[in-house]
Image (tube, rainbow, N blue to C red; front, side, top):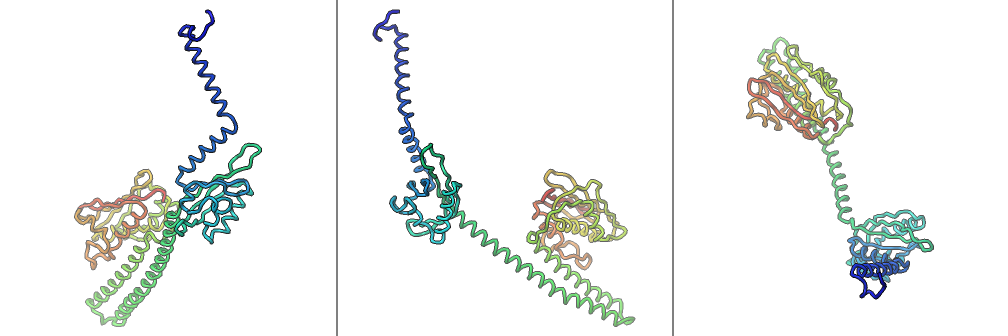
Length: 397
């Protein structure tokens, strides 16, 4: 191959020549961009473009803590100009109550080289103050240059107001709950005191009459005592109902077989009542008293409504992952489907109260407790076919 000008070169060699020339040109441009001055200028320009595009107020400070840059968000919000803001001039926009602690915290940060974070209020251009959270971090600088800081101010005013309003509402609610508990306790005590007096007085009257009391009078006095006992039970039930979800206890490990044994002992059923507890009852972690109240009401409800016939109550459990499904089944008179929703309403009872003592709150209380702990309760029953109450309870509450 002979040498010659590019125009005299074959087509393939000509393309190679142009390619080499282009590579040389690009290498020259790259070398220019790698010059320290240019690199720093390009990098700084990129940072400024990024800072101006951010929704937060962005700032930079030097190693002595003097602010050397604010983005346009700062100037739009405060209404200050550059001369009024740079150095330590930014502090003129601080709320008077935040002034001293902000400068003290900032000095600690830049002297110690630690991260900086603080909540403070800045004056808006119209004179209103709003809450911000300020954060800053030192930036590693090339050898021989001073350390700089880059920081942001993020508006948290609405968030702060929401938190404060929530805290205020919570305090008010706690105070109202304490007042309600005190009122309920006093009312319960004051209402039950005369009821006990009525029961005692009727008993004394019966004793004073001695052999002169007739069966009819004795029946009337016993009816009077029964009504007084019912009213006392109603007061206790209302007090329990009002406390569901407001009076919390500590969670503990509960062995259901042991808990149910205690419930049966408390109910002390008659000899013709058989209560069968399944052998594989689980263990849950929960508050003990609410779960005890649920079983006590459901089993007690079956005993109260047995209508004199021998009764068998079976209690079982089924694992359903995060929940356990319990069943309390009896061979009692059953409940017609049209009443299944009604029985869970407050002050509702299907049997006459002179025949079956009850406050009408038992199942309503059970439903409220179960739902408060994230469970559900329902009934499967028909007239003359017994009843099965199902409810779910969290394995870990």
